[in-house]
Image 1 (cartoon, one colour):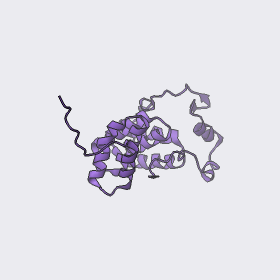
Image 2: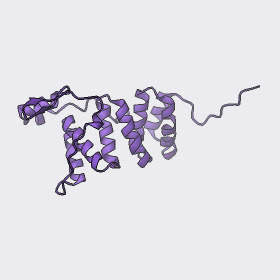
Image 3: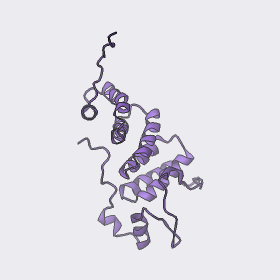
Image 4: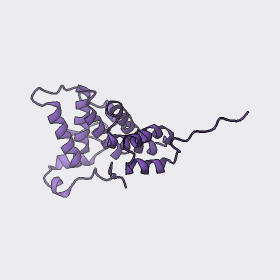
Length: 187
């Protein structure tokens, strides 16, 4: 196992959830509706990235402070809170590759592979030498059945690090010959 995107990392730890209020526990467990001011809001749509508050990030709360807060929420399984903060960051700073990567991981954990792929692709275009990001992108492409599209990313992983165990494992999963010249078809 390569140890990248853990499938069950979205579960909260018992120590942390015991300190939450009942409102917070409901909010964290409900993916169908969001509780706001004691009222039930409309169900969420599949396009989570489009659901972003238009609120500007204040001068007192920097992008990096927000990012640290999002990572903390993500780590403790408060996925809707982390998701909202990642979205706010990306609205304010669309090229924040670290937020794209983390939001991609969150989307992958929620089985939204299309959104995860989009986020990983955007981040990869900015940081193509990030091996973990490359691995995550390939894993999304494999989940989506896009094995041929994964090949150039695997090639880049192995070119940058020929001893990459993860790159070799992904190559075996994709099972596509690398660097083999195919003969021209005969007349």
